[in-house]
Length: 116
Length: 108
Image 1 (cartoon, rainbow over the protein chains, first blue to last red):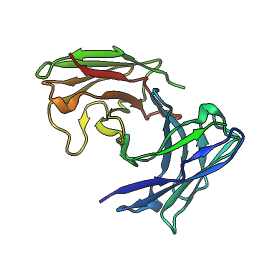
Image 2 (image 1 turned 90 degrees about the vertical axis):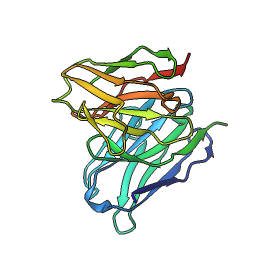
Image 3 (image 1 turned 180 degrees about the vertical axis):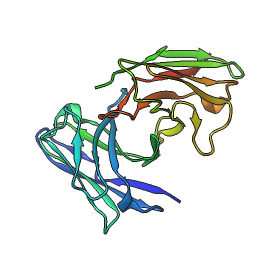
């Protein structure tokens, strides 16, 4: 059974940093691109970032470029999102998602709250 | 980037009725690289339709998708109580993948 489990979300002050993790199981993680998607309170889904299967190619939404870094450890079947210089507008539930004709599997999400 | 506009913003219907949701793209979505998701509060989004018209695994046949190019439609033939949720379209033919703003389907 495919599972994606996010962790690492918490309350952080503006300007702070946080690292999210997404533990994958039930499929050959190392062969898939992976993505992060977020949903701010009361808002819709927004794509954040993606990484290719070997970790060498990454892409970011303009809103997070230069502040967020996506990475992966294929030996640990884990996807990461390092978030620096956090802003109030980064407050959201962050989902990791597997792309296969759309996003066929999603995690349950982890909540990041940026507030003083 | 491709902007997806969904309409209506909110759709109020009763169980048993037919729901028609629209998604319009600002430019052609490379082929039929269009997906639909159902999202309920506190849950992970659920893939319903990919390739504009193919149902994902385990999705009931009351859900159907159609369209190509810039205009797409999700139809739910007879609404069940569990279908009341927010629905998003997403294009995955061009980077960055973008979502529509969502259509909330609520009980009348």
